[in-house]
Image 1 (cartoon, rainbow, N blue to C red):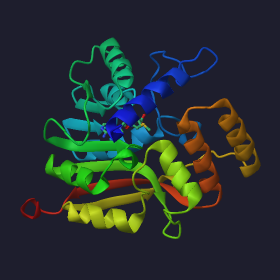
Image 2: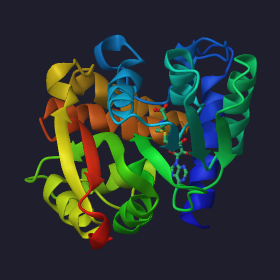
Image 3: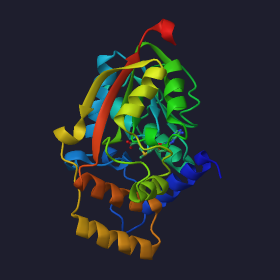
Image 4: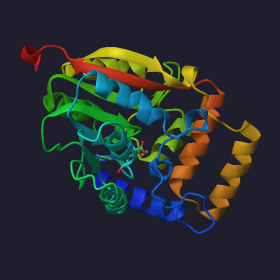
Length: 270
Ligand SMILES: C[S@@+](CC[C@H](N)C(=O)[O-])C[C@H]1O[C@@H](n2cnc3c(N)ncnc32)[C@H](O)[C@@H]1O
């Protein structure tokens, strides 16, 4: 099965977990329910605010949300700046349907939710935002290259994701299990990522460690282990195994939650 197909199934199944009757996560039109990322300081909107700040600063009119989930960022932007257009890209048809409903409820015709890979962007953008989605890329270097080639001069790429410390080995068995459970092809780490983005013609404008600025909630290791055990017995969705391992990695100081802002080096270098 292709990576894209696996990810489609992964997120479609996760939606069914989110919408089970005993799950507090429901389909209300409230923006808080349209996020699929971790909640810093218990506030699901922090990533949207942080990313939007850079999009706004760049004077962007047309934005790609690369890996849009339920379209939460487009809805957030519609409330901040209704004239701005967001094209959300997702591999999950279920996510796209939820995002479309949310945009329709807002009568937001300037923004769209597309069932398409972010490796095949439809247009040139002033900003490309990727919140907890780059790690899913089957080829991170190629994805960055593609994004650079679809960025208008003066535009920005805003990435929010987990970056692992240099001492963490991608071959560590727990890391391998984590990567498998979330369908990550590559462990994101600063030095290789910087090499890839430079090769793609991008420069770092800002590098903000959000996990120093905001609190990342984690449970003690013993509780994570107890839950992991129960999850295995239950045959839970793989994403929950990955999430639990990630909490343990935060407890060990193996990982930071980072916001990166990238711009094109020079038009000539592309
Ligand atoms: C963890 S969710 C984050 C969702 C959203 N950014 C948020 O903050 O709520 C990851 C998203 O990336 C999307 N994704 C992963 N690989 C993708 C690809 N190649 N093309 C488009 N979307 C992709 C998934 O469909 C999912 O919507």
